[in-house]
Image (cartoon, rainbow, N blue to C red):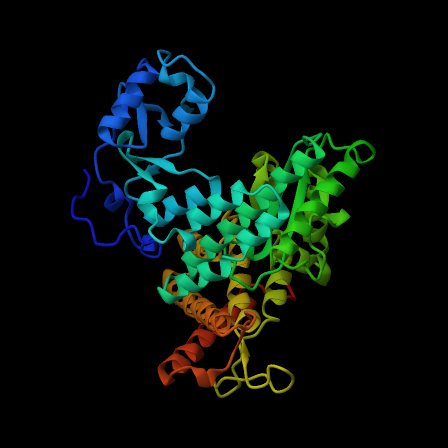
Length: 485
């Protein structure tokens, strides 16, 4: 059933993070049978004052039509309005369950550039939510920004659209949005930019000669991006790929996308871990060889590459290529105890900044003297711990929070320790996002260096406790996977 008690201002994009989908369903679904003529559907939409209707028969959802479909597929195409609405419908549309959060609907719309999502209660259609339901201040909303990105026809247009990302993060920080939510929203916008660049690249170069999967790695892959991000991406090509026949096309396509992302503010990876680098633009069989070699050798470079490329998430193209790769890698890593020991050894090289007395240890010299690096000495150690748990448990999760939750469910770590780590992660990530938002508001570039004197006594105490939790869990894992075994 639909909950009629709706909180005020639920259409504010910031409030979506904690608003249930059920609070956005303002009326029962307007449904029509598949046999309904187009002209009748248009009249019903006019009379009901709705921008879309759902096509339902025998309680099963078949599709939907929108006022845009009537304009583009009927009027502009000169289609006979006595024909069935099924001829202009979007079939098997994406849906969302009424128990989910509005935040999930926002991400769905932003990632896939859609504006109408049917709401389901189990197998039953109960309503529809639209991008208008989700946004009030559209200039700062993720849905509006993603829609604007997909409308751009040039790199210059994408650069202009991407300039709003900082304002989006500032808006989320001002509303005290969770770091988990902010990371997903900012990453969704990066996905949209990447997808649109690939579409523009294909328009310029022609259709791809073989299937491919564009894959995000690093923070984008984990859905944990902030305004301070460089590129980490790669291409997994179908095994039909032949360098002599297809190499030039994918070289040009990946260069176009990576150059475009750099122009939009996502600087080139210092380690060149990008699809435009020949080594990271390979067929599926070669990627399998890469991971097998990294797992078997476990040397420092191999461990570093595993850390980057194990955090992979599909963005565009053929998802099945990445799914096959990840499934094989996960099956292999969870049985390799020596490899896991090396991964733990690599993970604990990032130590929280606490001295032997448990006090904060600040950077002693250079540009950032007197500060702490929230990313590399605070957040990265938690990311590394979660990655080891995922490798050990064969978990397909990529996001750090989801990896930790899966680890608790599989018994890799106790639920209490997971709660402690999640609290530490959220606290440190929120400090980082708020710090970056303040710097951007003051006209400075976002960075990760926080000066403890800007915090309250309570915040400094919590900061030390968060670092202590991480250090304790590092010691536990080091004991579980000793290097001498």
